[in-house]
Image 1 (cartoon, rainbow, N blue to C red):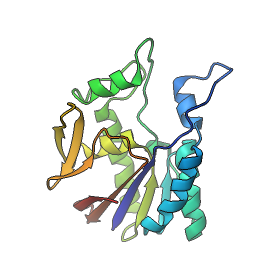
Image 2: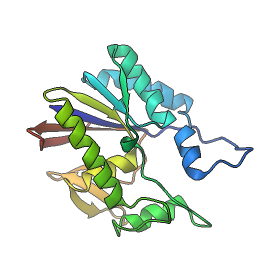
Image 3: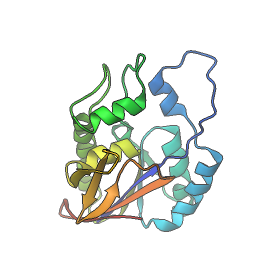
Length: 200
């Protein structure tokens, strides 16, 4: 079986909130940008799946809808596929949080999630999805941090020249801190065990 982990990173940035939404609420409701919508249309031809899962973030669902329409499939929404919770930022920023977490997989802000906690959550939900969809190809619309956390358990870890975490499989870089418009990770499994990991 094959699982595609997809993160569409092109979200709308130029938003001003006139009311007092919390950080997590802003992240959950942030829509795709126009370029993000265009990329969502393009990626339908790059994936071959017959089951769709998505986090409940607006950006993930907006990406999933194009594949669902193209394949005439339902979208299974599971909040366990949501992005890693940031927690209470205070006067700190997300970039600093990411840098700290890449050195200490247990580091987190209050009410947030560490890489290890996100990895455990993602591992749990992916194992359930795999067991419930034997011999089917699955696409999961989720988020880069959630994907990175999941793969820390299975891929080799190292650091690039900027001292940022990168994940490799058989000497091939699968994920790093370079901002891509869309991340598509293809994982092939046999009896629940990973046979191969590739990027599309």
